[in-house]
Length: 103
Image 1 (cartoon, one colour):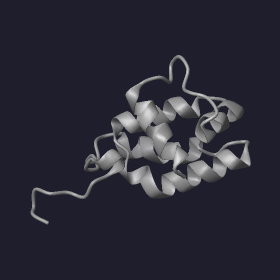
Image 2: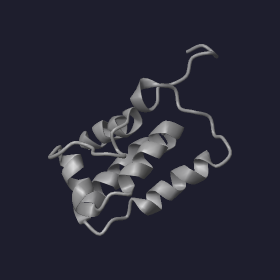
Image 3: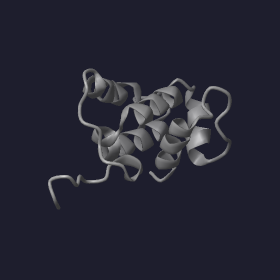
């Protein structure tokens, strides 16, 4: 690997370097991912174990939007029993949702 190459992060892109607040937002995701529904807890914890340090600003924002959903709605979206509605239908949120569906 040359000095200009980097390992691919989430979505096949290189991980973003830490910007002020980005690491803090990543850490907050872990806390917000603690849900009342055990199934969501498990999927989100596994997802963050793998992807947390690789998430860029757009993916963090997409995951934050998903975490604003209620437990049942989030679980149904992750299971693929429904598609993102208004406020969730953007490319970053869809990317994160696709990644979550793999866990």
